[in-house]
Amino acid sequence: MKESTGKIEGIACLCKENGEIFKILQNDLGESYEDLEGGLFVNLFDEKSRAKASSFLIDIQTSQVAFSSSLNLWIDNAMQTLSFLGIKIKEEQIIIIGAESQEDTIAWYRPL
Image (cartoon, rainbow, N blue to C red; front, side, top):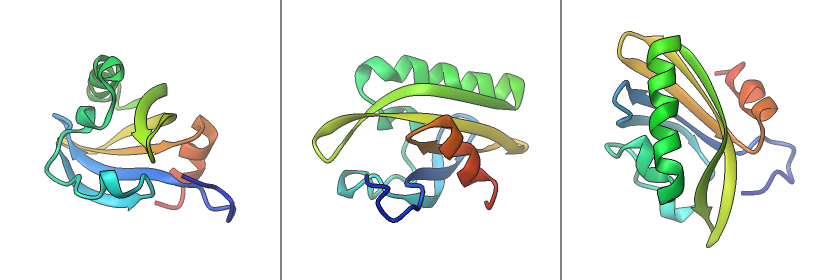
């Protein structure tokens, strides 16, 4: 993941409330994250971050919006930490955005 062009990079997806990804809006995570639709959001992360990712989904369901500032995943053979923003946008549907900082997730959400 690089931000050399000034464009915010990361991932944006639509999920069911249970965390099943059903649409990828943008994905800059690399080849190992190409076929995400139909998979679970929590499975994107290393084992230590999965419990935190599950709590993040629960927070979205109960509060309509949630931030998580440190979920780890492997990108290009290196562990990366991304910040995530999740917002319930329809009944049983959420948008999740992950980028290098909370500020980037908010900036990225605005034009979506």
